[in-house]
Structures are given as C-alpha cells and as structure tokens.
Image (cartoon, rainbow, N blue to C red):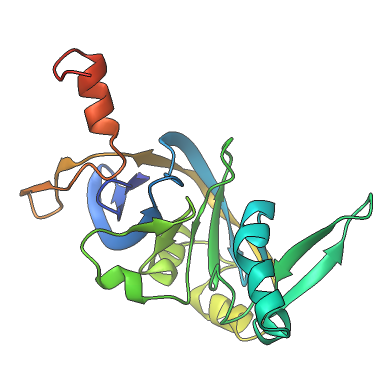
Length: 217
C-alpha cells in the first residue's frame, strides 16, 4: 500500500496490496521549483489547513501585490505575523480561499513539500501540469483523504464533513503511516496498462543520459 507521485507526468496513484485503486491528476513543481524525488511516509492529514507562506514567495509575489493594490492581503485572508527579532511572516487563513484548499497531507522530508488541495482547478485541464512552487496539488484530495482514513472510527466521512463546515484547523493522524514515493518518470505504464510518454520538463533525463555518456555535453 502506497501513494505514488509521478512529478514528470503530474499524476498521483494510490496502490493497495500493490494494485492501483485510485489515480488522479496533479500539479507538480515548475522548472526552477522542481518537485524533489523522495521516499517518506504520510503520517497525518491537516483538515482546513492555513498556509504559512514561505519567505521567498511572500517577498517575490505577495508583498508586491499588496503594495500595488493596498488591501490585497485583507481581501485574500492574509495576515502579517510579527516574529521574534522584529521580522514578519505571512499566513493565509484556512477556508475556501486558502492556497492549500481543505486538505494537506503531511510527511517528513528535507524539502518542506507535501500534497495538498487547491482552490485553483484550472491547471488540472492542462496536459503538462508542472506549475507549482514544488508541492503537489491534488485533483481529488477528499477521495484520497477518505481512502487513507478508511476504518478510523474518529474520522468517518460524516466527521470530516462536520469539520470542513467549521473552517477550524485540525490534524487527523492516519491509523497507519502510508508510504509515499515521489518519482520523476517521463515513460511509464499507466493504470490502463498502456505505455505513456511525457516531455523531459525538468531536463533530468537529459542530465542522466549526459552523465552516462549516452549524450554529448
């Protein structure tokens, strides 16, 4: 049983007993903000997560919007939080406008990436879906949450519905940690049994072939 992410195709698949039981579109990191290759274990799901905005994104993208259109933060649920030492950070409140949507799937890693919902659904209609800052956006996060929490007497579908209605943030530990693998495959077998191919968006295939001496520098 595992969650398998292919950042090269922006597809997420849930396997149970080594059989694919659910597959969905995803949005992975754009070139320059590549989703890393890693193996970990999903240990919990945050329902109604706030977004603690990374400093770089805040400085490059959000503060210029606030300066150009005063009140942008307030209209979009952001608040400025004072930090020790006199600095500030941005946090977007939980709810429908949160960049993380309603679900965040947490697993330990050195890259501060995770799987999450999103209110921006348009990118799922694209064929090449490398457009995020590095985290993986999910087309069907509720379906994945229901599957990973199945059998938990606390987090039944009805309990999840009730929590979603409050906008209050809560962490739901999984009954059992679920392995998650983030891979980069541009040629792969789909759940339909057919071979699929994608362009080498990150240039990692080219780099490997160059290092192996198959391609020239």
